[in-house]
Structures are given as C-alpha cells and as structure tokens.
Amino acid sequence: MLTRPFQSHSRAAFEEREATMTYVVTDACIRCKYMDCVEVCPVDCFYEGENMLVINPNECIDCGVCEPECPAEAILPDTESGLEKWLELNSTYSAQWPNLTRKGEQPADADEHKGEEGKFEKYFSAEPGQGD
Image 1 (cartoon, helix red, strand yellow):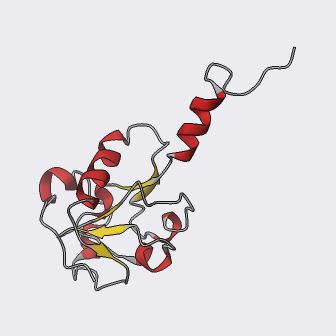
Image 2 (cartoon, one colour):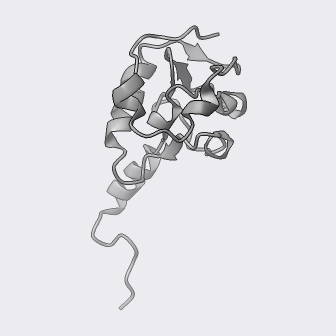
C-alpha cells in the first residue's frame, strides 16, 4: 500500500494551509529596519512602524524574494514553529501602519542592533512610521 505525505491531514486542509502561507517580520527587524526587502517586494506588502517593518499576510504572495534580502535575517516563513505571535503582530500592525513601497534610510545605529536579543521587550513601538 502506498502512503501519501501528510496522510493525517485532509487534502483540503493541506491546500488551505498552503494558500495562506506568508512571510512574517520578527523582532530582529526592530531598530535595524534596513528596508532592502521593500525594494524587491513585487506586491508592496510592507508596512512601516516607527522602528520596524511588518508584512501584510493577506497581501503577501509567498514569493520569498524578501527573505534573503534582509541583512538582519528578520523575515521568516510563517510555517516555521513558534511564529504565531509574529503572524498576529504583522497582521495587526499592517492594518494600522502606512504602506511602504520604496526603500528609505535605515537608522544610523542599525548595525549596532543587528543580532541583539530581546529587542521586542526593550524597543518595540506601536507608533506608525512615515510610509512613502
């Protein structure tokens, strides 16, 4: 008997999950906000907060071109475990912050915060950025 991958899940559930996959921005972006990702996004799904970016999960087409462009490695597929908090945060703030379609200036001290741990607790701001 042949076994199918994902046999414990229905085909419809698998297809629905695939259709809703998105990329999310994590706390690695906070105080770095390099914005290289914005330059390559074909659907302009990035939104700007005061000190980080987020992706609108309803607009992301899962092309993945943004992920390797991020110097801070802040963009991950939401299929990785433990990213539920970031999917919710991206969804919430992309509805509140202005859309960003062009790369702007990164913070002068961005490199100093690259790789820093605990940035969400230390620095997160719910304030919107400037947008385009």
